[in-house]
Image (cartoon, rainbow, N blue to C red; front, side, top):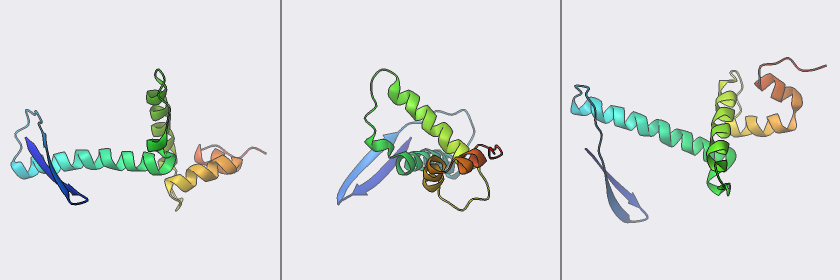
Amino acid sequence: MVVNHTECNGVFSDDVRYYISSLPLGVKRFAACVRGHWGIENGLHWTLDVTFDEDQSRIGKDNGAENMGLLRRIAISVLKSHRGDKRSVRQRRLRSGWDRDYLLKILGKAAAS
């Protein structure tokens, strides 16, 4: 069991989360694993929101939201895998939409003549 104490705009709240594991972990190791899991989740959500403004998406019919979420995660994976570029993921996405040669470079293909 993990109790999370948070404060937002002067309002305090407690969330209780339960985890089941057969691993023989001590308290410190277990806490590190939980923080690591939520760090990954929060980092991906933040990247999706900053890069694609996902929180403002109004796609909700049928499987549209799930399908677009999958496509966005694939796009972020491709954009992050492009090494040697100092631009943010959002800047890479925007530039790849404006510059065909850059898009091909991101995708790992030689620029078309």
